[in-house]
Image (cartoon, rainbow, N blue to C red; front, side):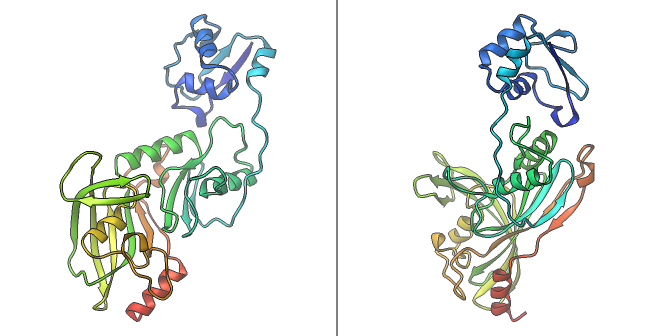
Length: 314
């Protein structure tokens, strides 16, 4: 027999999901069979697996110790890569990182090394996480490889769940800086429909809906122009793949350097000048109260600022 007391970091998840992580080598059918036979109980009572766990709950495994050990075989220890991360904010649940342009957010191919691996390497080095732990930290929003800026990561289950829910409900305000071709002198809220070509990893914007087209909204505010280029502050209302890049290109103002969507290089810059520079959190309750109403910003990278200065004589 073994008793497991639920810690704060594991609360909020379903019992069956917890068990599948803890008894990671056990078939799901075995776990549900043990629940039915009352060989696994929650707080001394029969459980179905759908119960939401709370801090200090007790799970009792009425199983032979060798069976538990067999099904709890630890993941082989892996040392994750490290890099010098630009950490804008960190607490026990959440990390906010300033991702450099050129770094993938998540794997596209098995051999890719991404922001997720560097995040795990950092937490492993800090002694806050190790392979085989019941919760694996990860990022909650993604940026294109060549888009720089703020990425939110969850360190704990509560952090992952809360940040993902806030992003899903669009209650976190996200603002970008970008330089586009042409003159734009009035704020606008663009609406349209986005369709993605998975094979080309490219999108097309339409004025009307249709099969596999999803509605999008993008708000922009011109900050300054020089008669040929405009610096924009963009609010991402919906958050779809390549949305800002494709939406601005569709109205004749491609992002500088964004060759995929018609943008031309300036000053040798051959990647899009797009930076996720500000996020604003709504009012939040415990355990995310420390983020309630707060604003976080990340300065654009040096190549962005160099071209901005060149174009607008700052």
